[in-house]
Length: 264
Ligand code: ADP
Image (cartoon, rainbow, N blue to C red; front, side, top):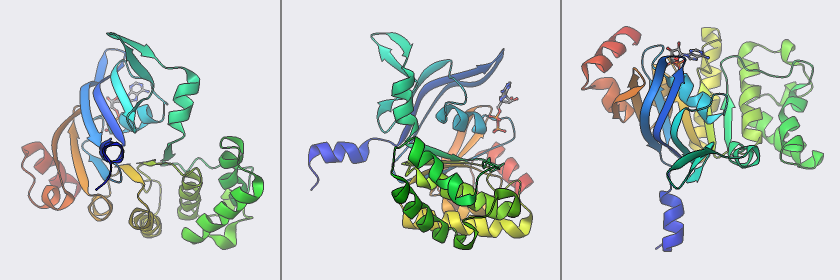
């Protein structure tokens, strides 16, 4: 039996949104959103374009600022906290410490073009985590093996295919040893024949690590194979949630049925 303290740590969600509000001008995209992601979960967000999925990932990367509510990462308040009944912004330093636990892979890879593959991967571990170079290189070489690109360590991003660049971006995110990985349409910019390689790498990471994943994708096959929970969004709200098998074979909500008919 785990001790109560250990049990608490296990039960603390990796991510919790509590009444989160996000507005762009007078467009209220999230209007008091609540949801939790348990540690080690692989959760896919699906739903029509404009339903707020990317905004959720961007809030978790502090690329957007929320207008209300609280976000917790591993039980710790992230960008804001309550002091009495006042919602106050946390300091840059406090945010930065939480932010390190979260890695993101974008649709457009975002590799540094002037650096080699290896340099792309070791940059943040050295400069953000303060690792000695030898340790960062060791880790990077291991990750390049994992994503099948050991022979490209000295190449520049422009010498690689889109699929290879995305695999480097995945290795780079993993190099920071995040507890949580956010994946935003990571296969959308790829030619169809390259999609399978990237999905294979992600499936491998999902199967061999206990990293928590929050995934936004139009690849329903990917959602089905990698995630254990699917949240269907519409208008910034979760209108249905279930395991992938249930949601893809017998969705209950009419809007989910309609959406899946259009994308499957
Ligand atoms: P999804 O990822 O589900 O397609 P988004 O989170 O990208 O949805 O967008 C949700 C809503 O927020 C849309 O109405 C979109 O136009 C709006 N939005 C997103 N980012 C911005 C921004 N930077 N400025 C203004 N409106 C935005």
